[in-house]
Amino acid sequence: MAADRSDEALLRDFLSGDADAFDILMSRHQDKIFALASRMTGNRHDALDATQEAFISAFRNAHRFKGDSAFSTWLYRIAINACTDLLRRKKRQVPVADVETGRKPKTVTDDIPLRVDLQRALEALTPDHREAVIMHDIGGYPYEEIATITGVQLGTVKSRISRGRKKLAETLEHRGPLEASKETT
Image (tube, rainbow, N blue to C red; front, side, top):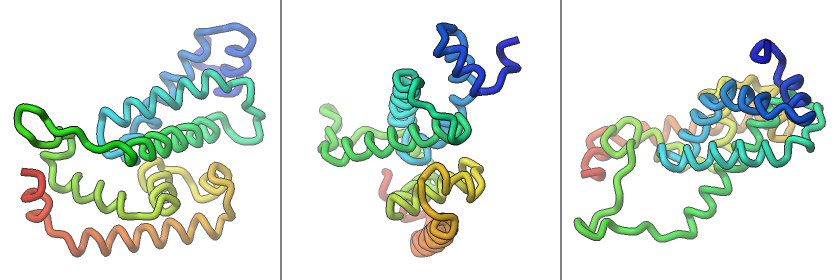
């Protein structure tokens, strides 16, 4: 049965012409990739875009997977790159105001103060710290796998996570929930 095959076996089958094998890979990993993208981008729309870009990139570059790491590690790195690229592009764009109300468009997290606080605190981290914290604390990846994905030493991963968590705690400590709900109204 196709669903019982390993990711690597499915990828080999896909490269040999079995289009259904890639569909299985997508369905197997889409929730985890979307969760990562949601945390990195801060809203559902961008997360969906980044998730789609990650799978398109994996589809197009499947032949480049060398097997030096697990398929999921390779796919996770592609997803991080897709999120980073999307955030870079968005940084260059000026937010478009809603023509009728004159306000910026709302995102799903605008109505949930705690999520807004957490997202803003994550955005305040350096990209390296944010990436490491999200991968470990939200993605559930162990330190060693993060080191493989990011291409940095294990000690650097641990340091980034520790410093990122500390900065998150400091940012969240200095910001009460009332401040966030005032800003979103």
